[in-house]
Image (cartoon, rainbow, N blue to C red; front, side, top):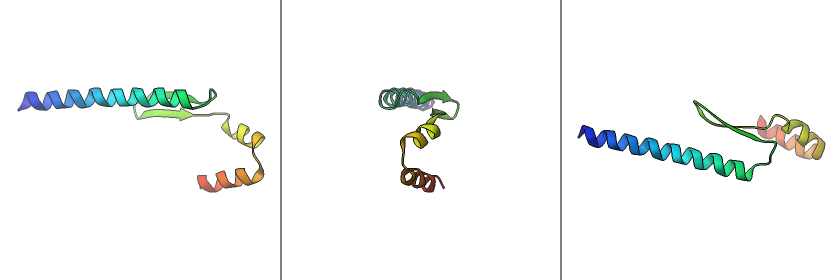
Length: 72
């Protein structure tokens, strides 16, 4: 019974790693180049440090107001 539990835990761990790798690959393929994808102990981190400047430069005031309401 203990061997079955160890086998199940190992299988779950391998699947979790594969899913996380697949998610990072998909994000990297779909997101723009200025967005960074990294991994820490909590999971996958997606960051866009210059996103606020890009949104302000490329968006109307209505778009910015909508995003600000969504963040609240």
